[in-house]
Image 1: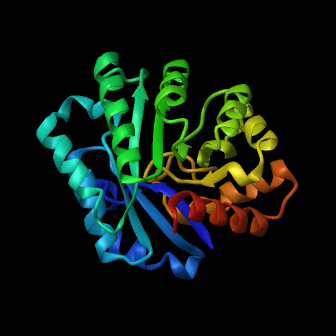
Image 2: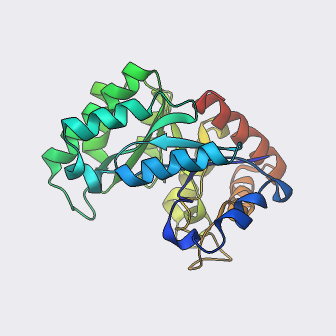
Length: 253
């Protein structure tokens, strides 16, 4: 069944129909979802969702845009949440130089601290990296070479993807791969081993074609799997089966 490795069902865009939508997942071929935290409040909401829905798990971490919200007290709270049985990863954490909401040194400081936390708690890591390819890679090489990492919403070069492959990392692939102008990502997906690819939505964002521009959900992952299959000369069913196996291995489920 489809495994959505990165979703945000705590988002306000799901307020009106969240329960109905999540309850429809199994009948539509979606077996497992990991809801990723980004702020302190979204981490709490992700855990609450995971406690309510048995097929949903939480990743807990602070997005680089929110790094300024961290201090020793909030960091201690974050660490305490990682002991919850429904939490399967630290994330999403990393660097974001596109929005630049926090200065780079603050982002790096809390990125490194959260990587150390993942190591201490023996958890995999979901990485957010936007317009920060080199700094992300250098930090991961120095501080996370021994950790299991997923480069969420992968957007960099094939050459860098191959470096992450050597480190045993995974890349998250979602709706962008279906866009006609996503030539770089299509090449990465075509060349990377299917064993290193994870399906993700980042919903409610990044809906694939033919629903581009609309609210995204895990129900759209069939379009992503179909596109990956076309790029790799595999059936959609083979892509779904292998990426589910990859995700269970990554999250230890």
